[in-house]
Length: 300
Image 1: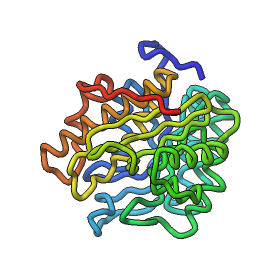
Image 2 (image 1 turned 90 degrees about the vertical axis):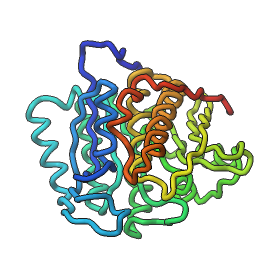
Image 3 (image 1 turned 60 degrees about the horizontal axis):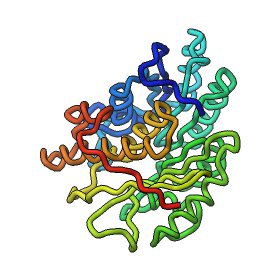
C-alpha cells in the first residue's frame, strides 16, 4: 500500500471496534490513545462497557448488542466519512453476532474505500489461561474474520490454535505464520504479526514479536520484564501501534521496530511503577518517538 506521510494535512482515520473499560486499559481503552498520539483520528465503536477488565475476576457493566455496530456505522456513513476511513481495527469479539457485525463493517468500509486495511487481533486465549472466549468463537473468527483480514496479530497461543501447529522454534513459528498468512485477504498485504513469541532457540530472558509477509520475515526482540501477572491490554496496544505505524510508513520492518520499542517503553514504565494496569498515559511520548529503539532483524 502507499502510506500517507505522517505530516500530511489529510487526517488519517481508523475505525476501532473493541471492548471498553472505565478503569484501566484494555480493548479500545488500550488502543485509542496510542493511535491518537501517532496522529490518527480514531472512530471508536465499543462492543461492551465494563467497569474493569475481566482479569480481576469481577466487574460490572454490559455487553452491547451486535446491532449497535451497524447502527453506529450508519451514523458515520451518514456524515459521508467512510471513504476517508484508512483502516479498521478489531479486537475482542464476545459473540457470534459481533464477529458478523465486524466483518460486515469491514465490507462497508471497503465498499467506500477499497484501499482501507483491516487488522484483526484474534483475541481467543493465551498461554496459561487457554481459550477464554466462548467455545464457538475460535472457529467463527477463523471462518469469517481471518479471510477478510489484511493484517492479523495473534499471540503464540492463538497462532497455534488457528493453524493446529505447535510452535517451539523459529522455524515452527515461520511455518505456522505462513500457513495463516495464506488464508488472509488475497488482495491485501497479508501480514501476520505473532506477538508474545517465546521459543526454545531464542536468547534467554527475551520476548519477541515476529512479522511475516510475502516479501520476508522480521523478528524484534526485547528484554523480558518480570511482570507477574502478565498485564492485560498489551496485545491490544501492540496491535494498534503496529497498524498505526504501518499505515504511517508502509514498511513492515519499520512498523515492527517502532511498535515493539514503544510497547517496551510502556511495559518498562509499568514495571517500575509496580501497577496492575499498564501505564498507558505515562508512556505517551514514546508512541511516536520511542526513547530506546529495538531494531527488527530479518530472519526469512
